Structures are given as structure tokens and as C-alpha cells.
Image (tube, rainbow, N blue to C red; front, side, top):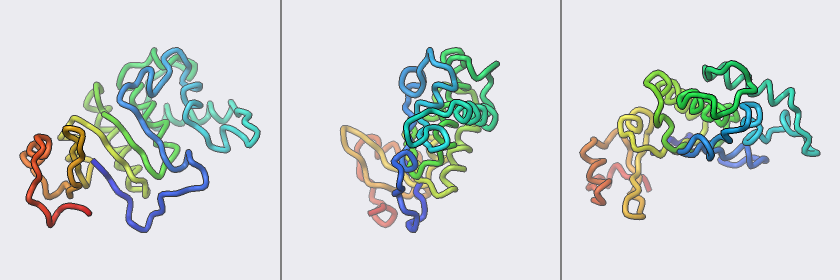
Length: 196
């Protein structure tokens, strides 16, 4: 479930918003405010100097430009940037909230159920966007029930079961059967492949 940056990459920054971003499982209500416009939803997690100056004043021109970039780069289908989050289809809203966080280029990105309820094309696009972020020195933690998704985009893997986290394993050394055993609470005899 974890995609790590190279060990030489520092996980700190001068601004907290540069370090950590998250995308919760529930799109409407947790990742996006349903009755707010896409521009307003972009503002919810944008804390960079180009959007909010040192006195806390919002630059609406820049936030509109950032929203337009999300819509364009992540192929979000919407008539206008003033449309509400609730007016988007599930796949378009998912692309919007993932894009909003990825374009901030966080050092750590935690994403929960990234392709839940989206069509195959949107799922493939979201997975590739996550891989692209990871290739830019960001650590990505993916929480998903979709094993195929995890095998496609992760390089290490751990299971949360009965309130405990398993050891972390290199995903290339695990089969789907091994993952099933981990989900059942078993401890695999793969000591040489476990991370410390």
C-alpha cells in the first residue's frame, strides 16, 4: 500500500501544505463540499502563496486559474467552473479531487479508495496520475479494497486487520494468495522480503 520516494528525499518542507495531502474515501461531504462551486472547492485545500497571500487575502483570479488547470489536466467534464461539486458525475468529481491534491505536489499523499465507483477509463487515468506523482519524489500511501489496483500501483504492501498492521512487504514478492493470508491475520514466512 505504500509507494516510497528514494531514501535521499527529505519529507519535510517549510510549509505544512507542501508536505502532506490526503484524499478521503467519501467524495461528497469529505473531499468536496457538494453545494460549493469547483473554484470554492479548489480553495478548500489550496494554501500556496499564489492563492492566499501572507495577509490571508484570497486571489480569486489565481484560484480560478488553478481550478481551470485541474479541469483541463484531469479531463473533468463540467460546463463551467461555477458548477457545484454535486453537479459532477462520480468519476468527474473523483478526478477533480485527486487532481486538486496532486497538482499541489505534496511530499506525502494519502489516498483512500482512489478509483472507487468510477469507470475504467477514469480509474486508469487516476492510477497513472498517482504513479506520476510518486515518480516525482512524493511518498504515496494508497488505501484500497481493490487488490488489482494495489498490485498495479504499489511497490510495497501491508495489511490492516483486526486493528493491527502487518509487516511491510515488497509487493513483487507477494501473490494474491499471500495477501489473502495476510488479510486473515497470518504472518508470512517471507522474512527476507519484509521491510524493517
